[in-house]
Length: 462
Image (cartoon, one colour):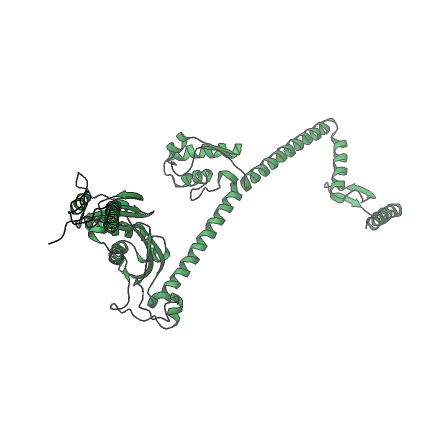
């Protein structure tokens, strides 16, 4: 049977204050007994202090710290500690108190973002030497044969074509999902397996809605659709506490067996796109040179003047054609096109042009300016000719004979030039005109002198 610990009273009972018996020595008379008594009192006091310290240390052992990017839950006898509403308590960064073991235990999980690479799930099976090679290098090494579905990974696109891809996935444990993670997963390796499986399933689902060419060209990315599909599985169906934060497409290629044919199509598409761009650039340049800002396209939209001309040519309504014709006539007269919202609605040009005032320039304006200049010169020439004719008519009415001589002399100068000298001017019986040239030596001499003087001036000018 276990002995009870000694106390001061028990010591006093063993060694009374006045002595133990008549034959036993007193406490003052026995130094050994006194020494034993003091030692037992000190040991007992130290034992009590140690027990108090141990009790305090045991109670303090329930305090725990949660680090940054961590979450923690408490387990009481193996079950999650919950609040009054039955929701598991989740502890964020900082100091927290709980019951010490064995009453409670703590489970900490990392909530920081992690990365998972899907480089084989939807890719060709590669040996160690081939993993560092690009798709082009693999094709040149003879890997362009048929796929082996039991070894090679792939995705089936919405047009039933096959594509290969590599992806990187970022995921984490949600702060509010720590309890779900501890209850449903509880292990990082198992969590990675769940994430991989969910993302692969999401990839298959997302790829089935997109054509292969859009995937390979990068016009459509699978990341968002795959992430949403994977999160539905991890959160709604499994309540795992895991969350996919991002899915990035690293590489998307066609099967090696059709790589060369696909590249030929790509080159043809690139040449087609280049030809369209060149044609569009030439169109913009030609229209801008033709009529300036009024005809210059804005993006894929024709300039307002071009749109009006096209509407005029395409319209079968006489009223619309007359209205457009009047607007065009006024625009070319003023070299300025003014369009209102009412005009656009009236002529059915909403969406084809914008309201506003546009200057007509370019070759159209130059041509109109030249035509106006030629018109002015022509009118002025006709007016001058009319005035001259009126002057001639007045002279003829005053003296017809003198008018005739002067008119013939003027005609002679116009036809032969001022350097031609005539010896005689004769009129035949039938009204013929005869000019006798070169019979007078003086006339010949004057003609030669004039020619020599002209040649000398030309030589001096050089």
